[in-house]
Length: 188
Image 1: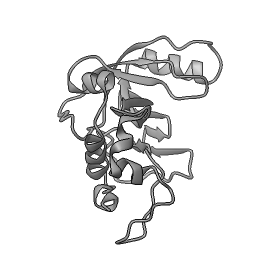
Image 2: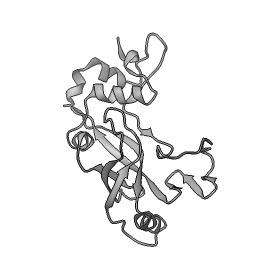
Image 3: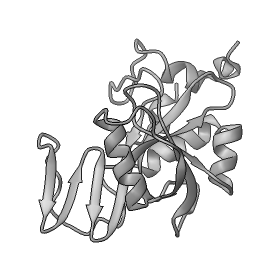
Image 4: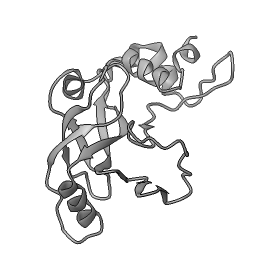
């Protein structure tokens, strides 16, 4: 049994038939969060998601790859299990990798090699609740077939959250900090 099933907010959050009495908003459970670019991407021009790539001088940004000066980044998935449930928050975040890792990933993604070996990386997006003012050391690993690579923090609060999970209230805090206030709409 899902331990959160006793929390009326969790019930409303997962009930697509429940309608917020103040605004009519509905929910259907945990939704993913994605970052469009590494935090260090300096260009003001927003990337048009309908285009496959944004290029400013020699710097390039696509949905999966980024090159900024001599830096290389891969968009990867970072999972945070939710305590008391079988669900996880998936975050599409950017990882700084070596040029060698970057090009090995391109070879893997284009089918030139069959495997993408894990390597060290750094998380390049500030995540709410984890106070990362500097890049967080991580390991990047091959994702499931057809998915982006997976990112795992090596130590610290983020590594602990990946191993032990986050609470429902922490999930709501992350949503609020990334621009989607949910908490007020779950009160009955």
